[in-house]
Length: 596
Ligand code: GLY
Image 1 (tube, rainbow, N blue to C red):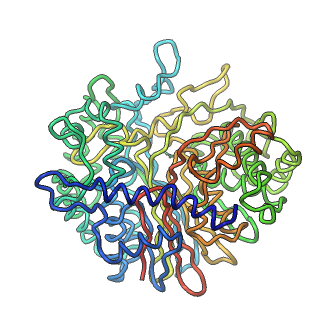
Image 2: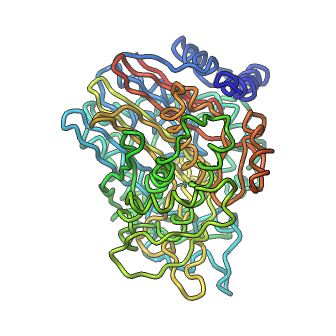
Image 3: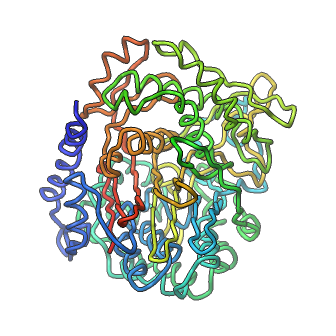
């Protein structure tokens, strides 16, 4: 299996059918104005062609990579006009909230990593949702203290945390913006008012979630007009979303966090039929973005930097890479089952620590330094010294400056989410992962946007055998995340922005993207296209329909249980080289990279 073969296997298995389906199925219903969800400009066509050919998009000055061509074009327009990466991000996010509403939006939360070229510093901003002040540790338990079924908790008001994304957009713009705030909403407002063509992915997801979407009148009216799921190419308008954005554009985010929009959010949550929640106008009014210290790990002479708690992203990616450091997986290569034994078991060991120790550090002491301590990682790496799958993986005992007994976490995390990577002409670099948690979040829609179900990223149990779980629900606390927006640094300069959606598999997607690029010398598009093999808790997930399935026999012989399945990452990355920028978008989704 050569590198070319790996990548071709994926591109033929996933990309070509997706495009073919788009062409074959894009029959717009009567009255539709446009059948091409991508907008169809020459730049978009070139970006899609590069992705299909498994080649990065090249640029000199700026680049943007995200999950939908209309969102990428909105960001590109801002960058071309001299805007900063932070400005472009606001445009990208507000368009994503319209055209990819199942994944992220102003009703959700996000983490942002920023490299500032002028000051040569890295900053991370936490725009994660908070638990309502009225929440209790038993929010997701029945009257007997047993965890609710996942979707009984998700669908409705109970799972809705205080959205952080609008505040994050404003804070990024306040710190690093160069374009007037109202301008940044123009693209999303125009698309919402003029209408956009429903993409194949959005149509598929609506069809498969129709029963849940249909439970709430506002959501049903939007996604299931006349009772039927929206079709590919159908033109969808969202005047309510346009009006919400106009209010935020003209009055700032106070228009979201206070006043009639906040009142509508709280009322929608409180009155959700069958499953009301407790998010209040006070929760919204007191929401704050938090600046956190970046978390960095050294790997192959690079610094892998990202988001610390309440995200487990950078700590877990850092632990995996730190444990792999003593092993020459570069020489073993991506076809070697031995490479994947090392990666898989490093990941299992890191996930064991994650389940025990990682949560919102404003509420629970997290041994962040101990978890990435080189001596501790060396000790954990020694566990990988055998030939077979580890029979079991338990959390380690990192150095901890608090005496604290914690039990293992029991969170259920399913994939949705979206990732944005941007480099501007000033040399600033942005890596932001953004989410409303489950696909379509809580399914509650208000004023044209969906509300998140982020609270189900908490552990449903608060204690195990009387010992508290770090990621238990507490009022005002932020649920642990797996989002891993990352900037890779070399000699103090940024060389790569990368991140992905995918629930707790985000961690494996990002780690293997970095390994593909750094250890196996793949170009950044090839690294994103690499077939996935992901192990978090013991079972090895191999990406169905790709060359990853060739690992099935050797990994099973090592003792792993194997599961073949779709692994729909949504990696978006930009490499910064001495010769320019190289952008890449995941062939498994509809995004592109675009630059000039
Ligand atoms: N809800 C996805 C995450 O935060 O990891």
